Image (cartoon, rainbow, N blue to C red; front, top):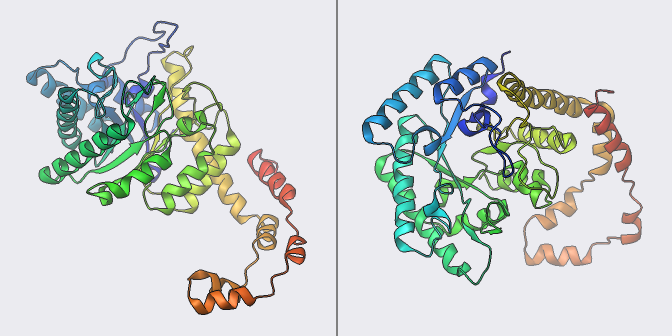
Length: 385
């Protein structure tokens, strides 16, 4: 099966390489090495492979071991026609990060986290990555008695400013993308939703280098509409990367196959990305069911990509549907004279607006055939139209 490389479908080493472990059960699949994962992704027709530093190189590896592993991985990518668009740092697994990395109360731990990230940035650059993701998996608390949240934000900002300068000094050309999550593994994480990072970015020394990497599951955990979070990032030109998966609302982080839980949300997400011509990587940060063997893991990976392609086709069908487009023209009522007044403030425009005969009773009578529009959308999604 082949997929359009322009869609830049990618998977992390930790996704298709997931061994089926959960908090209550041991692995159900044997661990694949980095070359086997490249072979699997080559088989399913993916565009690229992404990684945390320790997905590839063990945290305690010496330099010869590191160099050997990287050489093997580069060959595995080349043999399977894969690229590495994104890299990130594991700042959450090791015990040293049990109470945070960039936001730790311990200055030496904060320094170690920055040191580890610099080395991981070196690795990502060596593999060709141009996007660097930051997910603060341990940046949070279970009790606010333990950490000052104002100081935590300052510490995080200082770390990012330092790492921006490091990227510039090394001429890596990285774009930094921040990934929000409300909870898990911490009880309460800092920068819980995408909007938290969109608010932080203007306060950084190099805001032009920094954007976001929103994830479906993370916003759905908070009960939010993911499409709206992505729209905010797109409007601000800060959508640098995106993690596609699926999630039941209000549950733990499930990382289901893309579109498998909420196909209507997935449809509008794909439509948004395609309508606004998002051209960055589309990473599937998801896991196959714990019950799956590796043949079924391949079906999982193909399913993620196939669902996106199908929804992309349906989004185009929605855009081409004459009745839907007529309904949109009915709903979206424009008035050039009024719009000119509200486009930009001036004392003249304010005076004219105050004098405008805007009748709320008449305005409220305008038809809004939303039930019909939504039903037509459902028929498009279900293949009945």
